[in-house]
Amino acid sequence: MTDHALLPMLARIAEALERLTPPPAARPDLGAADAFVWHPLPTPRLAPVPKVAAVGIDLIKGVEQQKRILLENTLRFARGLPANNAMLWGARGMGKSSLVKAAHAAANAEAAGSLALIEIHREDIRTLPDLLNILRVESRRCLVFCDDLSFEREDADYKALKSVLDGGIEGRPANVLFYATSNRRHLMPRDMIENERSTAINPGESVEEKVSLSDRFGLWIGFHNCDQDTFFAMIEGYAAAFALPIGQEELRAAAVEWSVTRGGRSGRVAWQFVQEMAGRLGVRISG
Image (cartoon, rainbow, N blue to C red; front, side):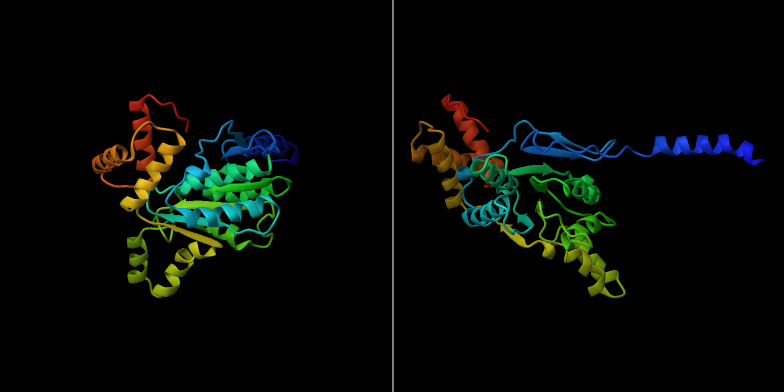
């Protein structure tokens, strides 16, 4: 085949490759909202969230120490001071994700527009480096948040997170902080860790990289199961905030019955109970 005949074929191949290559991400307008959701496909973009589903930070009860630590860290970051990536781990329904969103709202209440909240879904965590490259050139401070983060067997996505937490050659962008919540202390199931230890040639080395991932967060905040006194403090705090017309004794009795039907106590159960009581009592609440 002559060079002349090859040119049209090469041109068609080049055009086909261009069609297969995704277009570059447009520079986001981080002033369009205070919160965004990261969508890496088909074209990378940050979708604005007009209103975040958040509870006021003063309404989050039973986790006072955890609240203080995360709020202080978030406010420092929003003010332009050094702060740590944070992992919130532990019992379900104890307000981990609510606390992240409330801390973000508190930072913007102190200084409007100081902090953008960007949610990245667990299944998109491998694209985290791409998101950070987009945010790196922005001036606005960004809190990147992944809710319910965990990794399963044969899951290599943790390497993308590890590179971000370690910093790599470029380092984590100075305007970006990463928060994650997880029900798992080490971000993976215990049976996976034990299996790796029992089958590996060098058990210690085989699990060290995965288990140590959680250690790379500067803040490691634990949330534990809710006892009855804490549960009562939660519902009474909500009841007072929303001025529910009900006495303490009656409120507590109804709360105990509700927690029994739900099979446990937690911040989530307390919030659901208060919504139920507000509906029964004809009180309108938001959230």
